Amino acid sequence: MDESILIRNAKKGDVNAFNQLILTYQEQVFNLTYRMLNDEMAAEDATQNTFINAFQHIKSFRGGSFRAWILRVAANNSYDELRRKKRKPTRPLTVTDIKSGEEMDDPIWLEDDRDLPEEHIIKKELEQAIQRCIDQLPKTFRAVVILVDIQGFGYREASRIAGSPIGTIRSRLARARLQVQSCLQGVRELLPEKFRLNSGSQL
Image 1 (cartoon, rainbow, N blue to C red):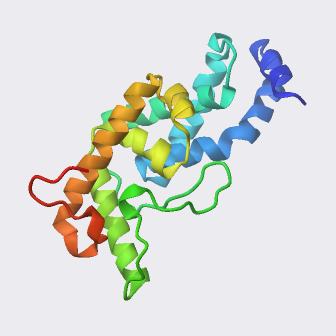
Image 2: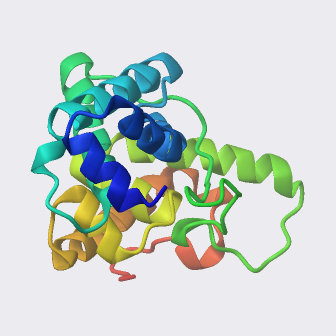
C-alpha cells in the first residue's frame, strides 16, 4: 500500500496501517539509536519508544519525508537516553550505510590510499580510537557525525532529521571532524600521513 495512504490511515487511528510503517522503518530506527547509544538493550528501548511516541503524535506530521520525521523522533529519544543515563558508547565503530546495510567507504579521517602493513589490525585499532574520540563530542556534534559520516545521509536529510539548518549541519560536521582529528593525534602512528596535524597546520 502507498505510504501516504498508510500515514493517512494511521492518523485516523488505524493500528494495522501504522504497523506497516513500523515494518518499513524499524531497521533504520534501530540502526540510528544503536549508533547513538552503542547499547543493544538501550537501542531496543529507544526504538520501541520512538514508535510509541510517533503513533501518539502522528497527527503532527504535516507531510514531507516521513522517514526523516521518524528518524528525528528516534534521535530525540536517543538524546533523552544519553541525558538520563549519561551513557557512553564503548563498542567499536562500524561504518554502515543505513539504506543498504552495507559497509561504506571510510569517513574523511580514515581515508588512506596507501597499503599499510598488518592493515586489518591497524584499521581495527584506529576504529576503536575513533569511537573513543566520537564519545567525547557534544551530543549534537556526535549526531551529525553519525548521520553523515557513518549512516551516509546527505546534508539535506540530516538537516531534516536533526531539525537544524543545512548551514548548521555543515558547521557542526566540520567542527566535529576537526575535533576527532585533533583527538586522534594521541594515536598518530595509526593515522594516514595527511591527517597528522602539525603545530599551526590547518585542515
